[in-house]
Image 1 (cartoon, helix red, strand yellow):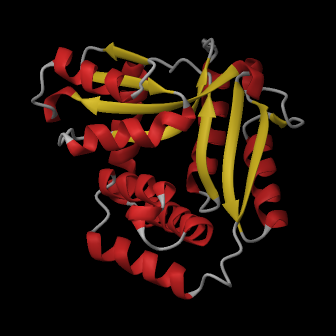
Image 2: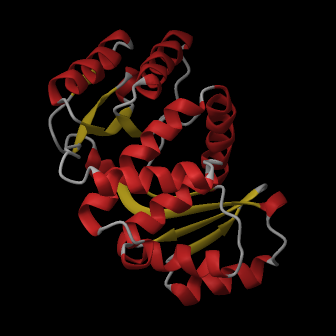
Image 3: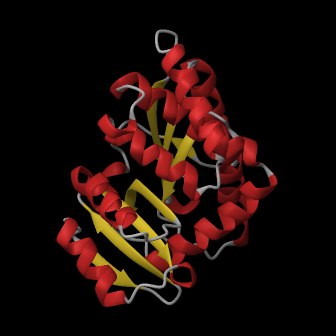
Amino acid sequence: MSGHSKFANIKHKKEKNDAKKGKIFTVIGREIAVAVKEGGADPANNSRLRDVIAKAKANNMPNDTIERGIKKAAGDAGSVNYVQITYEGYGPSGVAIIVEALTDNKNRTAGNVRSAFTKGNGSIGTQGCVSYMFDKKGQIIIDKEECEMDADDLMMIALDAGAEDFEEQEDSYEILTDPDEFSTVREALEAEGVPMADASVSMIPQTMVELTNPDDIKSLQKTLDLLDEDDDVQEVFHNWDE
């Protein structure tokens, strides 16, 4: 997915989320809980927690809400039982879809995800049926309007920190990293005061699928909307060329 379309999606998603902050805060709250359980409540010693905090700030989550979430997760560490599950499937015209979820009830989540695919005339597939069409990469998107740094300087900071690729788009910069180098690169940019519109480990499609049939577009959008409304769903990746 190009940085431009990714950035357009981020802006669209944030506009939707402004109207329903509860969903994104729930998603991030669960990520905080899992990160604390895995690596402790001190961000200095927990790179995953640092990444989640950065994501929270990029989504305008208040600092006191973040700190409350960390304290709650630390206090309830024994009772945090979210399980990460990945579903793979197909939308109309063979559009590949990957759904990442964090859930405390696998049956509920499986039923909801399957229903979202079915209602959009798609189908759940077996593990690995579409993931081979994607590359797992750390992806950092920077809004040009928010970043005062020169593109060349920004590129050098990213590459020196271990980034694999830097691309300038019309209204954004896109930085790609190996997943293992993502935290290092993100933190190097953060240390330089670079504002990030989005920073996460993503599944990036190798090729895109265009939909021309209005019914197919409507069906796929229905699936994506249903998944977006589900609190158990953390991320949805697809190769639809919107």
